[in-house]
Amino acid sequence: MNNKYFHSVELDAELCCGCTNCLKRCPTEAIRIRNGKAHILSERCIDCGECIRICPHHAKRARSNSIDEIKPYKVKVAIPAPALFGQFNNLNDIDIVLTGLRAMGFDMIYEVSRAAELVSEATRQLIRENALKKPIISSACPAVVRLIKIRFPELCDNVMPLLAPMEVAAKMARREVIAMTGLPDEEIGVFFITPCPAKVTEINNPTNSEKSAVTGAIAISQIYPELTSKMDKLSVIEPIAKSGLIGVGWATSGGEAAAMLGDKYLAADGIENVIRVLEELEDEHIHGVDFIELNACSGGCVGGVLAVENPYVAQARIQNLRKYLPVSLNHLEENDMDKMKWENELTFNAESFRLSDDIVEAIDMMEKMEEICKDLPGLDCGSCGAPTCRALAEDIVKGNAKETDCIHKLKAKIQNVYDQLGNL
Image (cartoon, rainbow, N blue to C red; front, side, top):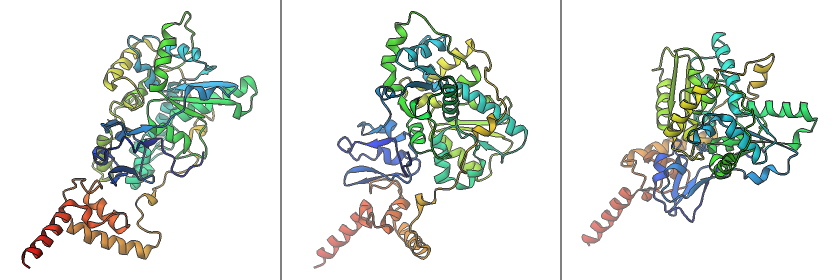
Protein backbone atom coordinates (compact mmCIF):
# COMPACT_ATOMS: atom_id res chain seq x y z
CA MET A 1 0.00 0.00 0.00
CA ASN A 2 1.35 3.41 -0.89
CA ASN A 3 -0.83 5.77 1.13
CA LYS A 4 0.96 8.96 2.05
CA TYR A 5 -0.56 9.12 5.51
CA PHE A 6 -2.00 5.74 6.41
CA HIS A 7 -2.90 5.59 10.09
CA SER A 8 -4.06 2.66 12.17
CA VAL A 9 -5.35 4.97 14.92
CA GLU A 10 -8.87 6.15 14.20
CA LEU A 11 -11.38 8.43 15.91
CA ASP A 12 -15.02 7.56 16.54
CA ALA A 13 -16.51 11.07 16.54
CA GLU A 14 -19.79 9.83 18.04
CA LEU A 15 -18.00 8.70 21.20
CA CYS A 16 -15.71 11.74 21.43
CA CYS A 17 -16.70 14.30 24.08
CA GLY A 18 -13.94 16.81 23.34
CA CYS A 19 -12.50 16.33 26.84
CA THR A 20 -8.87 17.28 25.85
CA ASN A 21 -7.28 14.24 27.57
CA CYS A 22 -5.77 13.05 24.28
CA LEU A 23 -4.84 16.60 23.31
CA LYS A 24 -2.50 16.94 26.28
CA ARG A 25 -0.88 13.51 25.92
CA CYS A 26 -0.07 13.48 22.20
CA PRO A 27 3.75 13.61 21.82
CA THR A 28 3.68 15.37 18.44
CA GLU A 29 0.80 17.82 19.01
CA ALA A 30 -1.18 15.95 16.37
CA ILE A 31 -4.60 16.46 17.98
CA ARG A 32 -6.91 19.47 18.01
CA ILE A 33 -10.39 19.90 19.45
CA ARG A 34 -12.64 21.50 16.85
CA ASN A 35 -16.40 21.92 17.12
CA GLY A 36 -16.35 19.90 20.31
CA LYS A 37 -14.63 16.86 18.76
CA ALA A 38 -11.03 15.66 18.56
CA HIS A 39 -9.36 15.98 15.16
CA ILE A 40 -6.13 14.14 14.26
CA LEU A 41 -3.57 15.89 12.05
CA SER A 42 -2.44 13.10 9.73
CA GLU A 43 0.93 14.62 8.91
CA ARG A 44 1.94 14.59 12.60
CA CYS A 45 0.39 11.40 13.99
CA ILE A 46 2.93 8.65 14.76
CA ASP A 47 0.32 6.03 15.80
CA CYS A 48 1.93 5.56 19.21
CA GLY A 49 -1.48 4.74 20.70
CA GLU A 50 -1.26 7.20 23.61
CA CYS A 51 -4.64 8.68 22.68
CA ILE A 52 -6.18 5.18 22.73
CA ARG A 53 -4.64 4.53 26.12
CA ILE A 54 -5.77 7.80 27.69
CA CYS A 55 -9.26 8.28 26.20
CA PRO A 56 -11.88 7.65 28.94
CA HIS A 57 -14.68 7.39 26.35
CA HIS A 58 -13.01 4.81 24.06
CA ALA A 59 -13.33 7.21 21.14
CA LYS A 60 -9.92 6.20 19.75
CA ARG A 61 -9.27 2.75 18.34
CA ALA A 62 -6.74 0.96 16.16
CA ARG A 63 -7.36 -0.74 12.84
CA SER A 64 -6.00 -4.24 12.32
CA ASN A 65 -6.77 -7.32 10.23
CA SER A 66 -9.20 -10.03 11.29
CA ILE A 67 -8.31 -13.71 11.49
CA ASP A 68 -10.71 -14.35 8.58
CA GLU A 69 -8.42 -12.40 6.25
CA ILE A 70 -5.86 -15.21 6.24
CA LYS A 71 -8.25 -17.56 4.39
CA PRO A 72 -7.63 -16.54 0.73
CA TYR A 73 -3.90 -17.39 0.89
CA LYS A 74 -2.60 -20.84 -0.07
CA VAL A 75 0.04 -20.68 2.66
CA LYS A 76 -0.82 -18.81 5.83
CA VAL A 77 2.14 -17.72 7.96
CA ALA A 78 1.94 -16.27 11.49
CA ILE A 79 4.85 -14.21 12.74
CA PRO A 80 4.04 -13.65 16.44
CA ALA A 81 5.65 -10.81 18.36
CA PRO A 82 7.53 -12.07 21.45
CA ALA A 83 5.15 -9.88 23.51
CA LEU A 84 2.47 -12.50 22.78
CA PHE A 85 4.22 -14.97 25.08
CA GLY A 86 3.77 -12.65 28.08
CA GLN A 87 -0.02 -12.72 27.83
CA PHE A 88 -0.48 -16.20 29.30
CA ASN A 89 -0.22 -17.28 32.93
CA ASN A 90 2.05 -20.15 33.99
CA LEU A 91 3.48 -20.55 30.49
CA ASN A 92 6.73 -22.53 30.50
CA ASP A 93 6.81 -23.63 26.86
CA ILE A 94 6.52 -21.28 23.88
CA ASP A 95 5.49 -24.25 21.74
CA ILE A 96 2.09 -24.28 23.45
CA VAL A 97 1.35 -20.82 22.04
CA LEU A 98 2.82 -21.63 18.63
CA THR A 99 0.88 -24.90 18.34
CA GLY A 100 -2.24 -22.95 19.31
CA LEU A 101 -1.64 -20.65 16.36
CA ARG A 102 -1.34 -23.68 14.09
CA ALA A 103 -4.70 -24.88 15.42
CA MET A 104 -6.21 -21.52 14.44
CA GLY A 105 -5.44 -22.16 10.78
CA PHE A 106 -1.87 -21.03 10.19
CA ASP A 107 0.26 -23.38 8.11
CA MET A 108 3.59 -22.06 9.32
CA ILE A 109 4.83 -20.17 12.38
CA TYR A 110 7.97 -18.05 12.19
CA GLU A 111 8.76 -16.31 15.49
CA VAL A 112 9.73 -12.66 15.30
CA SER A 113 12.09 -13.46 18.18
CA ARG A 114 14.16 -15.52 15.70
CA ALA A 115 14.68 -12.43 13.57
CA ALA A 116 15.35 -10.36 16.71
CA GLU A 117 18.36 -12.53 17.47
CA LEU A 118 19.71 -11.88 13.97
CA VAL A 119 19.15 -8.13 14.28
CA SER A 120 20.93 -8.18 17.65
CA GLU A 121 23.92 -9.96 16.16
CA ALA A 122 23.99 -7.55 13.22
CA THR A 123 23.89 -4.59 15.61
CA ARG A 124 26.77 -5.98 17.69
CA GLN A 125 28.77 -6.40 14.50
CA LEU A 126 28.10 -2.79 13.41
CA ILE A 127 29.14 -1.53 16.85
CA ARG A 128 32.39 -3.53 16.71
CA GLU A 129 33.12 -2.17 13.24
CA ASN A 130 32.41 1.37 14.42
CA ALA A 131 30.33 1.71 11.25
CA LEU A 132 27.57 3.95 12.57
CA LYS A 133 27.23 7.31 14.27
CA LYS A 134 27.07 6.84 18.04
CA PRO A 135 25.11 6.55 20.10
CA ILE A 136 23.13 4.24 17.84
CA ILE A 137 19.37 4.51 18.36
CA SER A 138 17.36 1.31 17.86
CA SER A 139 15.02 1.30 14.85
CA ALA A 140 12.77 -1.45 16.25
CA CYS A 141 9.92 0.78 17.49
CA PRO A 142 8.24 2.46 14.49
CA ALA A 143 6.55 5.04 16.71
CA VAL A 144 9.96 6.19 17.97
CA VAL A 145 11.41 6.28 14.44
CA ARG A 146 8.49 8.43 13.26
CA LEU A 147 8.83 10.63 16.35
CA ILE A 148 12.46 11.29 15.41
CA LYS A 149 11.44 12.10 11.82
CA ILE A 150 8.99 14.72 13.09
CA ARG A 151 10.51 16.20 16.26
CA PHE A 152 14.22 15.35 16.29
CA PRO A 153 15.57 15.63 12.72
CA GLU A 154 19.17 16.09 13.91
CA LEU A 155 19.08 12.53 15.28
CA CYS A 156 18.01 10.84 12.02
CA ASP A 157 21.62 9.82 11.31
CA ASN A 158 21.84 8.09 14.70
CA VAL A 159 19.00 5.67 13.97
CA MET A 160 20.22 2.18 13.16
CA PRO A 161 19.60 1.55 9.42
CA LEU A 162 18.40 -2.03 9.89
CA LEU A 163 14.89 -3.37 9.40
CA ALA A 164 12.89 -4.19 12.52
CA PRO A 165 12.61 -7.90 13.46
CA MET A 166 9.01 -8.01 12.24
CA GLU A 167 10.11 -7.16 8.71
CA VAL A 168 13.16 -9.43 8.82
CA ALA A 169 10.99 -12.33 10.01
CA ALA A 170 8.47 -11.77 7.21
CA LYS A 171 11.18 -11.72 4.55
CA MET A 172 12.81 -14.90 5.86
CA ALA A 173 9.48 -16.70 6.23
CA ARG A 174 8.55 -15.84 2.64
CA ARG A 175 11.88 -17.11 1.31
CA GLU A 176 11.45 -20.35 3.28
CA VAL A 177 7.90 -20.94 1.98
CA ILE A 178 8.87 -20.20 -1.63
CA ALA A 179 11.82 -22.59 -1.37
CA MET A 180 9.56 -25.36 0.00
CA THR A 181 6.50 -24.88 -2.22
CA GLY A 182 7.55 -22.90 -5.29
CA LEU A 183 4.43 -20.73 -4.85
CA PRO A 184 4.39 -17.16 -6.14
CA ASP A 185 4.82 -14.47 -3.51
CA GLU A 186 1.24 -13.19 -3.77
CA GLU A 187 -0.19 -16.56 -2.68
CA ILE A 188 1.66 -16.41 0.64
CA GLY A 189 -0.03 -14.50 3.47
CA VAL A 190 2.30 -13.40 6.28
CA PHE A 191 0.47 -11.98 9.29
CA PHE A 192 2.10 -10.28 12.26
CA ILE A 193 0.48 -10.83 15.66
CA THR A 194 0.85 -7.31 16.96
CA PRO A 195 0.76 -5.61 20.35
CA CYS A 196 0.68 -2.07 18.95
CA PRO A 197 -0.93 0.12 16.25
CA ALA A 198 2.40 1.61 15.11
CA LYS A 199 3.31 -1.76 13.60
CA VAL A 200 0.05 -1.80 11.64
CA THR A 201 0.93 1.60 10.19
CA GLU A 202 4.49 0.47 9.40
CA ILE A 203 3.15 -2.50 7.43
CA ASN A 204 0.80 -0.36 5.34
CA ASN A 205 3.13 2.61 4.93
CA PRO A 206 6.76 1.54 5.52
CA THR A 207 9.23 4.19 6.62
CA ASN A 208 12.36 2.76 5.01
CA SER A 209 11.25 0.48 2.18
CA GLU A 210 8.88 0.63 -0.76
CA LYS A 211 6.73 -2.27 0.39
CA SER A 212 6.47 -4.39 3.52
CA ALA A 213 6.92 -8.15 3.34
CA VAL A 214 4.13 -8.44 5.91
CA THR A 215 0.63 -8.97 4.49
CA GLY A 216 -1.26 -7.70 7.51
CA ALA A 217 -1.38 -7.45 11.29
CA ILE A 218 -3.78 -9.11 13.70
CA ALA A 219 -4.09 -7.54 17.15
CA ILE A 220 -3.15 -9.70 20.14
CA SER A 221 -6.38 -8.53 21.81
CA GLN A 222 -8.40 -9.83 18.86
CA ILE A 223 -6.71 -13.21 18.60
CA TYR A 224 -6.35 -13.84 22.35
CA PRO A 225 -9.77 -15.40 23.20
CA GLU A 226 -9.71 -17.97 20.38
CA LEU A 227 -6.01 -18.68 20.84
CA THR A 228 -6.49 -19.32 24.56
CA SER A 229 -9.32 -21.71 23.77
CA LYS A 230 -7.21 -23.61 21.22
CA MET A 231 -4.26 -23.81 23.64
CA ASP A 232 -6.50 -25.33 26.34
CA LYS A 233 -7.63 -28.10 23.96
CA LEU A 234 -4.26 -29.18 22.59
CA SER A 235 -3.59 -32.91 22.72
CA VAL A 236 -0.15 -32.71 21.09
CA ILE A 237 2.36 -29.88 21.37
CA GLU A 238 4.48 -29.47 18.24
CA PRO A 239 8.20 -28.61 18.52
CA ILE A 240 8.03 -25.32 16.60
CA ALA A 241 10.05 -22.82 18.65
CA LYS A 242 13.45 -21.85 17.27
CA SER A 243 14.46 -18.84 19.37
CA GLY A 244 16.25 -18.26 22.64
CA LEU A 245 16.17 -15.86 25.56
CA ILE A 246 17.86 -13.06 23.57
CA GLY A 247 15.04 -12.95 21.01
CA VAL A 248 12.18 -13.42 23.47
CA GLY A 249 13.71 -10.75 25.70
CA TRP A 250 12.96 -8.12 23.03
CA ALA A 251 9.36 -8.16 24.30
CA THR A 252 10.28 -6.06 27.33
CA SER A 253 12.13 -2.80 27.86
CA GLY A 254 15.88 -3.37 28.05
CA GLY A 255 15.74 -6.72 26.26
CA GLU A 256 17.19 -5.45 23.00
CA ALA A 257 19.84 -3.39 24.79
CA ALA A 258 20.88 -6.35 26.94
CA ALA A 259 21.38 -8.36 23.75
CA MET A 260 24.28 -6.03 22.91
CA LEU A 261 26.23 -8.02 25.53
CA GLY A 262 28.01 -4.91 26.76
CA ASP A 263 27.51 -2.23 29.38
CA LYS A 264 27.50 0.94 27.27
CA TYR A 265 23.79 1.03 26.60
CA LEU A 266 20.68 2.87 27.75
CA ALA A 267 17.05 1.74 27.64
CA ALA A 268 13.96 3.90 28.16
CA ASP A 269 10.26 3.14 27.78
CA GLY A 270 7.09 5.23 27.82
CA ILE A 271 6.70 8.07 25.34
CA GLU A 272 7.43 10.85 27.84
CA ASN A 273 10.66 9.20 28.97
CA VAL A 274 11.62 8.58 25.34
CA ILE A 275 11.15 12.27 24.53
CA ARG A 276 13.26 13.25 27.55
CA VAL A 277 16.11 11.01 26.40
CA LEU A 278 15.91 12.32 22.82
CA GLU A 279 15.96 15.92 24.04
CA GLU A 280 19.05 15.27 26.15
CA LEU A 281 20.67 13.41 23.29
CA GLU A 282 19.94 16.28 20.91
CA ASP A 283 21.47 18.70 23.43
CA GLU A 284 24.55 16.42 23.68
CA HIS A 285 24.02 15.74 27.38
CA ILE A 286 24.34 11.96 27.05
CA HIS A 287 27.87 10.55 26.85
CA GLY A 288 29.61 7.20 27.12
CA VAL A 289 26.76 5.26 25.51
CA ASP A 290 27.07 3.16 22.35
CA PHE A 291 23.47 1.99 22.00
CA ILE A 292 20.07 3.41 22.99
CA GLU A 293 16.91 1.31 23.06
CA LEU A 294 13.68 3.33 23.08
CA ASN A 295 10.15 1.96 23.36
CA ALA A 296 7.12 4.22 23.03
CA CYS A 297 5.06 1.91 25.26
CA SER A 298 5.64 1.55 29.00
CA GLY A 299 7.33 -1.75 29.74
CA GLY A 300 8.30 -2.22 26.10
CA CYS A 301 6.22 -4.03 23.48
CA VAL A 302 4.29 -5.86 26.21
CA GLY A 303 2.80 -2.45 27.03
CA GLY A 304 1.22 -1.98 23.60
CA VAL A 305 -2.42 -0.93 23.57
CA LEU A 306 -3.36 -4.00 21.50
CA ALA A 307 -2.04 -6.39 24.17
CA VAL A 308 -4.40 -7.71 26.85
CA GLU A 309 -2.26 -8.18 29.95
CA ASN A 310 -0.93 -5.58 32.35
CA PRO A 311 2.52 -4.74 30.93
CA TYR A 312 4.34 -5.29 34.21
CA VAL A 313 2.66 -8.65 34.77
CA ALA A 314 3.56 -9.60 31.19
CA GLN A 315 7.11 -8.38 31.76
CA ALA A 316 7.45 -10.65 34.81
CA ARG A 317 6.10 -13.59 32.81
CA ILE A 318 8.63 -13.01 30.04
CA GLN A 319 11.46 -12.94 32.58
CA ASN A 320 10.24 -16.21 34.05
CA LEU A 321 9.81 -17.80 30.62
CA ARG A 322 13.38 -16.92 29.65
CA LYS A 323 14.69 -19.30 32.35
CA TYR A 324 13.61 -22.23 30.21
CA LEU A 325 15.30 -21.03 27.01
CA PRO A 326 18.77 -21.33 25.49
CA VAL A 327 20.69 -18.08 24.97
CA SER A 328 20.25 -17.88 21.19
CA LEU A 329 19.40 -20.27 18.36
CA ASN A 330 19.83 -17.98 15.35
CA HIS A 331 23.01 -16.61 13.79
CA LEU A 332 23.86 -14.51 10.76
CA GLU A 333 24.77 -16.26 7.57
CA GLU A 334 26.48 -14.82 4.52
CA ASN A 335 24.64 -11.81 3.03
CA ASP A 336 22.06 -11.75 5.87
CA MET A 337 23.25 -8.30 6.91
CA ASP A 338 22.68 -6.89 3.42
CA LYS A 339 19.10 -8.22 3.41
CA MET A 340 18.37 -6.37 6.65
CA LYS A 341 19.46 -2.92 5.53
CA TRP A 342 17.04 -0.09 4.81
CA GLU A 343 16.19 0.73 1.22
CA ASN A 344 15.68 4.45 1.99
CA GLU A 345 17.43 6.87 4.32
CA LEU A 346 15.61 8.35 7.30
CA THR A 347 14.88 12.03 6.68
CA PHE A 348 13.07 14.82 8.47
CA ASN A 349 9.36 15.04 7.69
CA ALA A 350 9.40 18.78 6.98
CA GLU A 351 5.76 18.81 5.90
CA SER A 352 4.66 18.18 9.48
CA PHE A 353 5.49 21.71 10.57
CA ARG A 354 5.61 23.58 7.24
CA LEU A 355 3.63 26.82 7.38
CA SER A 356 3.67 27.40 3.63
CA ASP A 357 5.31 26.08 0.47
CA ASP A 358 6.32 29.65 -0.35
CA ILE A 359 9.43 30.51 1.68
CA VAL A 360 8.65 34.26 1.84
CA GLU A 361 5.10 33.60 2.97
CA ALA A 362 6.34 31.04 5.52
CA ILE A 363 8.74 33.60 7.04
CA ASP A 364 5.94 36.17 7.23
CA MET A 365 3.66 33.61 8.89
CA MET A 366 6.39 32.72 11.37
CA GLU A 367 6.77 36.40 12.35
CA LYS A 368 3.01 36.73 12.81
CA MET A 369 2.99 33.54 14.82
CA GLU A 370 5.64 34.90 17.20
CA GLU A 371 3.68 38.12 17.68
CA ILE A 372 0.46 36.22 18.39
CA CYS A 373 2.29 33.91 20.78
CA LYS A 374 3.61 36.87 22.81
CA ASP A 375 0.05 38.12 23.26
CA LEU A 376 -1.31 34.77 24.48
CA PRO A 377 -1.25 33.93 28.22
CA GLY A 378 1.27 31.08 27.93
CA LEU A 379 -0.78 28.77 30.17
CA ASP A 380 -0.95 25.87 27.69
CA CYS A 381 -4.30 24.92 29.23
CA GLY A 382 -5.74 23.31 26.10
CA SER A 383 -9.12 25.01 26.51
CA CYS A 384 -8.76 26.59 23.07
CA GLY A 385 -8.59 23.18 21.41
CA ALA A 386 -4.83 23.32 20.79
CA PRO A 387 -2.28 21.64 23.10
CA THR A 388 -0.20 24.79 23.68
CA CYS A 389 -0.43 28.54 23.15
CA ARG A 390 2.23 28.21 20.46
CA ALA A 391 0.18 25.54 18.69
CA LEU A 392 -2.83 27.87 18.80
CA ALA A 393 -0.72 30.66 17.29
CA GLU A 394 0.28 28.30 14.49
CA ASP A 395 -3.36 27.35 13.89
CA ILE A 396 -4.32 31.04 13.76
CA VAL A 397 -1.76 31.95 11.08
CA LYS A 398 -2.83 28.89 9.08
CA GLY A 399 -6.43 30.07 9.25
CA ASN A 400 -7.62 27.11 11.30
CA ALA A 401 -8.35 29.07 14.48
CA LYS A 402 -8.86 32.59 15.80
CA GLU A 403 -7.46 34.46 18.81
CA THR A 404 -10.80 34.41 20.62
CA ASP A 405 -10.61 30.61 20.74
CA CYS A 406 -8.40 31.34 23.75
CA ILE A 407 -10.91 31.69 26.60
CA HIS A 408 -8.64 34.15 28.38
CA LYS A 409 -8.50 36.41 25.32
CA LEU A 410 -12.24 36.00 24.84
CA LYS A 411 -12.89 36.88 28.48
CA ALA A 412 -10.74 40.00 28.14
CA LYS A 413 -12.59 41.02 24.98
CA ILE A 414 -15.99 40.54 26.63
CA GLN A 415 -14.83 42.51 29.66
CA ASN A 416 -13.65 45.31 27.39
CA VAL A 417 -17.05 45.44 25.64
CA TYR A 418 -18.81 45.40 29.02
CA ASP A 419 -16.65 48.27 30.29
CA GLN A 420 -17.35 50.31 27.15
CA LEU A 421 -21.10 49.75 27.49
CA GLY A 422 -20.90 50.75 31.15
CA ASN A 423 -19.37 54.08 30.22
CA LEU A 424 -22.19 55.02 27.83
